[in-house]
Amino acid sequence: MPHNWILGQVAGVAVDAQDHVWIAQRPGSLTADEAGAAQDPPLSTSGVPAPPIIEFDEEGTVIQAWGGPETHGDWPESEHGVFIDHIDRVWMGGSGANDHVVLVFDRQGRHQLTVGEPGVSGGSNDTAHLGRPADIAVDPEDNEAYIADGYGNRRIIVFDSTTGEYKRHWGAYGEPPGDGELGAYDPDAAPICSFRNPVHAVRLSNDGLVYVADRVGNRIQVFQKDGTFVREAFVASRTLGNGSVWDIELSPDPAQTWLYVPDGTNMKVWILRRDDLSVAGSFGRGGRNAGQFNWVHNIAADSQGNLYTTEVNTGKRVQRFVRKR
Image (cartoon, rainbow, N blue to C red; front, side, top):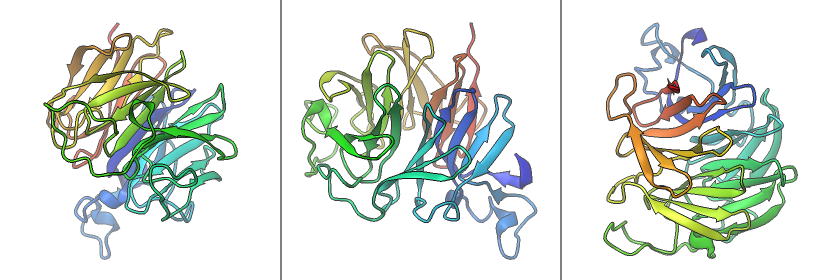
């Protein structure tokens, strides 16, 4: 990358209509040694924190980069998720303790819209405020933004994507969400009627379904756009700790045949058949080398079916996996 830049934890990836790859990364996650050139006095000649939002072309060349408190005063403490909508707006959330907003910018980084209020969260049935929102998907057909809300709340909430007007929300199984104590995940217990924190990702399919990542619950739940529950599936259901369902991406073929599910705990990407949510395979394993993962966090596909993955914890990178035809 230019300017001696180095990436921190990469907590969001998206591909736009030009097949450009966008990431949201966390400069604040870098250690002093990693960002040695930015210390006062410098510790080394290597390592300047890159801006949080970076756009790359298909070859990996940086097109532009921006973001941080100087871009907007409500910039999150911990960047989380990025989505490029049908009119090239950039949506992002935040997972920090007070990150209760989704910010929307044009592609040059000019602020367009704020959903929620910084530092204010009223729980999973508050229709005016968010709770550490993790991810966003925008429906161009109905002009609505679906927010996975999130690290604090336990719901999907939908807003008008132009005005930010509240539309509806729901929890697991399409029921009203709650904020009560859930206890630790038990793989031998019956499924609970609540998302666990975090509600980590949301994706929309071309045929009008909403896919939700209940990360620590090790499951994907599928809904109609009005919140009507359709079905669920568990992935690596005996996974403890941080859970197995970290993100969801749909393959770009017309039928969107496949789902790709990064699993940061087991350090692999699961491949699911979309029609019945059964596991067809996986790729990756824990490690530092190319094709291996440390806390694989997000995934996005381009129009050719190539996949882009991100890593948090100490992984701090983006990888590209080329589709083999």
